[in-house]
Length: 175
Image (cartoon, rainbow, N blue to C red; front, side, top):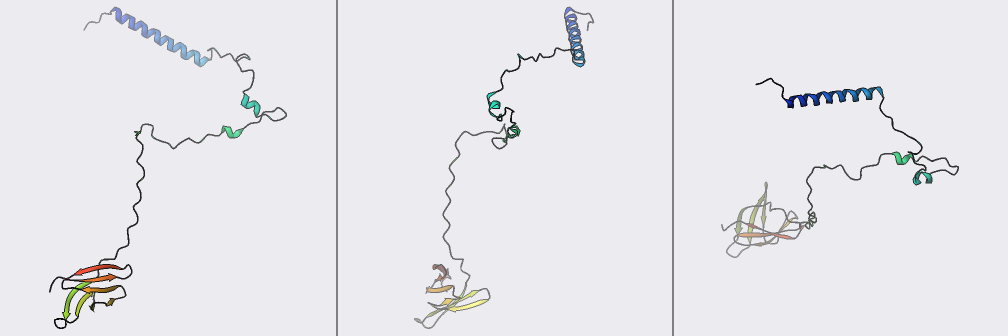
């Protein structure tokens, strides 16, 4: 590598020296206050007061200060992220609410235990269990003022849930 100075190096060094000298001169003139001061003369100031301030003067000519105009105004909208993505597509209309579901009967609480029939054509008695309580029911019986036995078949029994008048079927198979 050669250490000889080229004309390019000389020009760059001279530019650096001029820049440093200008920086020092500006910083010294700012600290001393020797800089030119702005001329604030009568010609530079407006001759008349603005129309809005003339209207807010009292009857004797003294100006009235409207301090409520000095308060900070609330922002027009909520603070939002300026860089958030925006969709220019109109939002979909709100979904219509589904009508409330019709009341339904609870699941049957009974378990089939067995059936008994007197003779070939006699009445059929069905034995049901709810928890530890057992019931022997025939067609037309009411169980705990909640269920009524509507019909008894060879494979199922039809019960009506009395509070809602809903029919339910308990299938027990052919035994």
